[in-house]
Length: 494
Image (cartoon, rainbow, N blue to C red; front, side, top):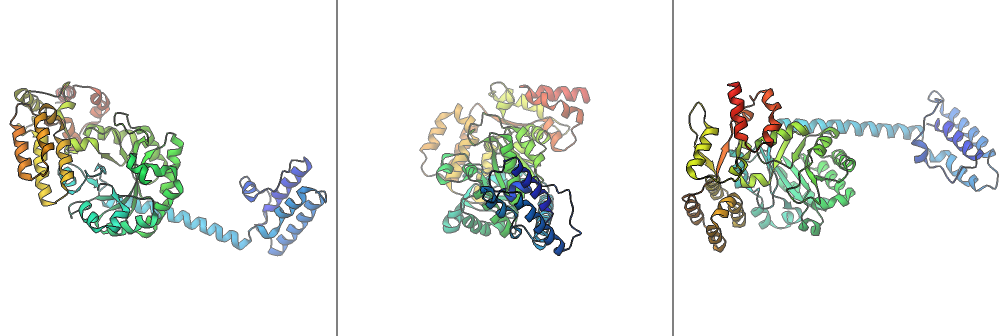
């Protein structure tokens, strides 16, 4: 509307009168503070044209003829450079349409999440280690969603052998996030189109901090090229039949992280997984910042998942409460203990030294795991590993993945019995027969590591844990003797 001229000309005349006019006043500068005091919406087009002409003449008469500001003023007040009524109405319509589309996108994001059952316990993406057999093992023990390992989008498109080897799934393997690394929007889209019939989300890896990601220019190193990140998300969101999710790391500054999350949401991201560490914080001993995750959750309107500091199920509920997140990812802890989401904890998390002789160990297990139904059979990593072998025979994967899981699940055992680890390392060609025999020989030795399912975890799993106990949950999680807290609470409350 040409009502812009009232403020425009008054500012221009004011600047000229005080000799402060330093070149053309751009429309961006002008419109950012425009607040017209005179409304001309009732004027006809002819009346507005006359008004424009009159103000133009008045303004130019105030400028010395040969002044350098004269040219700038002519450029500024040229009516042809301002939008017509039709152009303004079209622009307003575009803004309104964009707002409506964002509203619809957010609504679809939540509807999809709810249709999946709002999964809260999710296996994080891990290179070579969140493959199908391991995902299925974790699902048996409480996981309600899972990511594939990171897949290279270009190789996934161009190499059928890579695709068939690195990505396998089954009908029970849902909800499923298929994660790709990429720096080419078209290659990423081509890969995503192949994967979309078999998953619930196509995920973009924006969080990998490793050197290989730096060399390949993907993962967390795309944080240096936000326009490219935006184009990756927009291209998928506009062309896929399944939602797009993103897994990110945080910036050192909170405001940068919030702006990043909002940009991803506006570009079409339907779910955001936030690892609460920066790109440079690769050491897992550095605590993830749940406060930043909470701030992201409050800033965006789509589902948010939290990643970092999850050692056992009590941490999961701490994280959900403190961040407001809609779900939690576990990576390092679940590799050692695939039953973490079922409430099982490693022995090292229950004692000062993590080592007990069998009799003492079973006595401690009975104290924590007894119930009205009687004594429960202990679960240990060896048992989980044997179950994993069964799943690998059902869903074949490369041996390098299997070998890696053996080392992670039996790491504590191998520290006590390094001879068996050396024997494993010397075994060039593995077979399931040899692996099962090695596990059985290990179990027959004196020291065992049993996984405990605490009474507190069972209460949480069944969602009947009282509020008053949850209030003391923080102090419980911080104590080394967690069993004592469980027993004390039960004694006080029967």
